[in-house]
Structure formats: C-alpha cells, structure tokens
Amino acid sequence: MEIDAVRSSYRRWAPVYDATFGAITGVGRRRAVEHINRRSGSVLEVGVGTGLSLPNYRSHLKVTGVDYSAEMLAKARERVMDQGLDHVVGLREMDARALDFPDGTFDTVVAMYLVSVVPEPEKVVAEMARVCRPGGEVVVLNHFARDEGTVARLERGLAPFADKIGWHSDFSMERVLGCRALEVVEKRTAPPFGLFTLLRFEKRAHADA
Ligand SMILES: C[S@@+](CC[C@H](N)C(=O)[O-])C[C@H]1O[C@@H](n2cnc3c(N)ncnc32)[C@H](O)[C@@H]1O
Image (cartoon, rainbow, N blue to C red; front, side, top):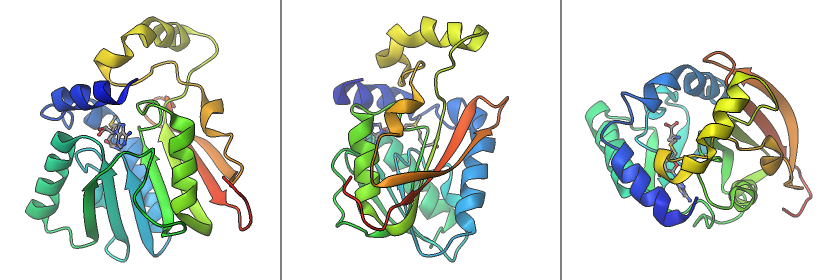
C-alpha cells in the first residue's frame, strides 16, 4: 500500500473506525495494553489511530502516540482532551518509516493493527527497534495470513483491494520477524476467534537493526 493510499483510506475510515474495525478488534487491543501495563516507563504507540487504546493504559506509564493520518489523530486528540488522559504525553503526525525520536528513547514500543497497513513494514519494525532501549520490548499485534482454510481463501480474495480497505489481508508474519535487533520472546493468538497474533520481542543489548 502506498503512503498516499494510507492517507486517503484513513481519511475515509476516521469517522466510522471506532464503531467498525475498532470495535471488532477491541479485545485484542485491551489484551496487548494489559501486558504493557505490567511494565514501567515510557511507551511509544506507532499508528495510534483514533487512540482507542489510550484510556486503557495505566497512569504510571508515559504514552506517546504517532500516526500518519491527521484525521485519525484528530480523533485521538479529542479523546485525550475529553477524558483527561494525563498519561498521554504526546500525539504527533509522523511516518512510522522515519520515526523522529533518538535511538533508545522508549522502554516499550507497540504497533497494533499497523504492520499490514504500512508501506515497507520491514523498515517500520527496524525503526521501532531503533527507538526502543536495549533490553526494552517491542510488541506487535496483527492479523497474519493463514496457509489454508476458509480464512486463507478470504484473505487471498480480499488482497487485491488493499488500497480500498486500508490493509493487506494476506500479510505474512515473516515480514516482521527479520529484524536482527529483535528477539521473539512470545507469540500467542489473540481474540476474536484467534484471528490475531500478539508478538513480543526483546531488543537485544548489542545488535544492529
Ligand atoms: C488499522 S488502523 C489501527 C489504529 C490503532 N492502532 C488501533 O488499534 O485501532 C492503522 C493505522 O495506521 C496508520 N498508519 C498507516 N501507515 C502509517 C505510517 N506509515 N506511519 C504512521 N501511521 C501509519 C493509519 O493512519 C491508521 O491510523
């Protein structure tokens, strides 16, 4: 998906996202944030969207969110204001392929339902690893392509419409496993119906991305 398609697709999604895709994916999102809440320090959420996750972070964390879509971010800003979410310390418009933060800035870096949307997901994962401190954690929650079965056929059928629907339905997990700076520490399925996977990585102490 090209970056212009991301912008136009999420401009269309922004008004209806929370009641549609956002609602279906709520349980998985809460599961990922529950895990992060057991950690401490700073969190970067890449592709924060309308900020559906933001009320679920506990107040001991300092959360920064970035997204490429101004319309999705505007919704996130509204949510932070309306709910007085003081643990959200920044929301910035930014391309996940070039994160404007120094190396090792965050204790935890998370991307939920993002990697199958962005152009150049490998570059995004490398950037997430770069801005995570050594020994910190990178968390990826996403749907990944199945090899067989009804869901796999549906994924392949939807694949040509990526620019219209806003994500790649047949996205392979291999594309996020290649970053040498990251070691997989957990891989588990997430609801609904085990359609999603939660991947946790530790940033190696000494490694180039
Ligand atoms: C499916 S939504 C997920 C939003 C949010 N993480 C959630 O859990 O609801 C994907 C988000 O990724 C954002 N996105 C896509 N490409 C991006 C990029 N290159 N840089 C930053 N954000 C991007 C979109 O604007 C959109 O808000």
